[in-house]
Length: 266
Image (cartoon, rainbow, N blue to C red; front, side, top):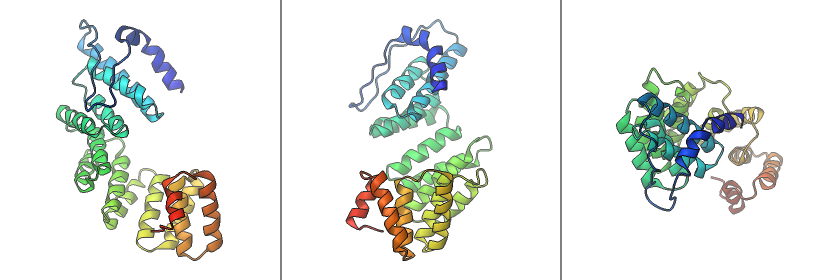
């Protein structure tokens, strides 16, 4: 929140000049606010667009999608050629289920900068979410191969998750283990390894990985649900019952608990 306050203070004069950004979440395209004063230098334009994009990203990370969308749309109105703003807005549009507009933003971002590994990774992630997992892998690989990519572990984990979706468990495990070279105790990577082990029938390994996940983070519904199914496979009814009670108490409205109630253990 401290970072948010600093950025908000920095943007005060910009917000007063621009006014509220007009957004239409129910439409298939996102309208742009009025273009700001044209007397700015190219450097000023880039800086202002970058700052609005960073602020939009912070709002996005904090779950405030409407304000994030407004800030990113302002960034694009300031600099219609700023690729990062389109890429980040594409992610926001995905979460508000504006898939056509999200696709347009990703394509625009790639047309402006088709070598930026963050943009490439974001588009791969989007493809994976909309059922184009096989297409997404090529984008993750492009990002991973870029020597300037500062967070290759992100694309590696995304590639692992999408490989799990299409049943390519060998590739999935390879991607995840490579990601662990950058962060040996990443709960997300360890959860993916547990998922892979479970699908391969290696329940003891899955239990070990899940134990590490719980040690490193507060287990969410996904972790509890997989742990429950692992204990069921290992015939530990006491542990299974305990996990079921935790799932019911902490996440009664989760899809995982609904699957438990239906008896869909696979």
